[in-house]
Length: 328
Ligand code: AMP
Ligand code: MG
Ligand code: MG
Image 1 (cartoon, rainbow, N blue to C red):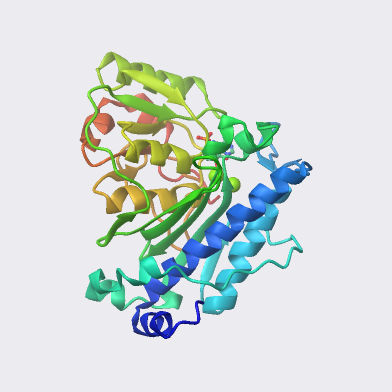
Image 2: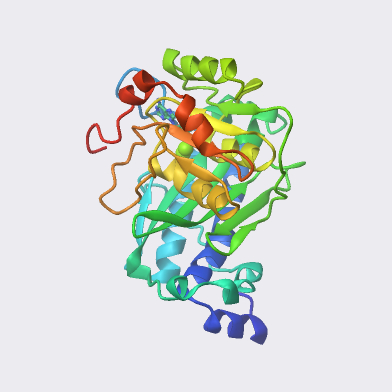
């Protein structure tokens, strides 16, 4: 952490949640630098994790970023912290980040008594070290617009609910990147939140579409809830799109995981929006949570009535996406 006395004092006076988020901001940025370095070196060392004949890709960037995030969090906060990550910690790149973001500590006084009472052993940290791997692997060089869709996602859950999160977008802008963070009840920071748009843009998957995904979107279009559909990669990027004016993120399919939704859910919730499954049920992020969001994903920003989308999704689609199918 910065050596100034002010910084030391702010850290010592801050509660655990603001400390955790302030570290996580810097850790996500270091993970983003690793991702960019591996892409620029040109050898992604892609493996396919899927066991069902489909594509579920992992690259050296996913592995290195996971290592950096998980090892840094545990080094800073001790192993009482429960971390659930998409990737195993197999990389050997010894790249830890111990710095903190003072902007987060500056918001500490806005935390409620309940937030202030949270301790390391009370939370679960959900880590997707690289969201949008399909798009990342497809982007042959750093200039590809698909790289905008890559994010680092670190979400923090308490009592099974997503209460804070960090979304880092390493290629944002001309590659300088940006980091968005939120604590529910405190606010969403690092992104200008766009209000109501006359045209309802709905965002959905680019690389995991199914006939049911398309059917749900067609029904929303017929009911006037989707003037246009944009297919973009990553759960993180789709929620960014919702904060920037899209009306909804609709994914009527299983496959998206808890580490995909935890951090984005905090960002959209802290700004007055909602993220649930396709039937409007809240997502559960406890240590015993089912990893897969079997009920699909539906996110809407603050200016959209979430229930309008929930109510328009037909019963047979909802029935095909039950809350629990199996553990994992
Ligand atoms: P997408 O909207 O397709 O970019 O997916 C958002 C997140 O959910 C990414 O991390 C994907 O890897 C994950 N995901 C969605 N559907 C599937 C699937 N059928 N198999 C594996 N991962 C999926
Ligand atoms: Mg992901
Ligand atoms: Mg990932």
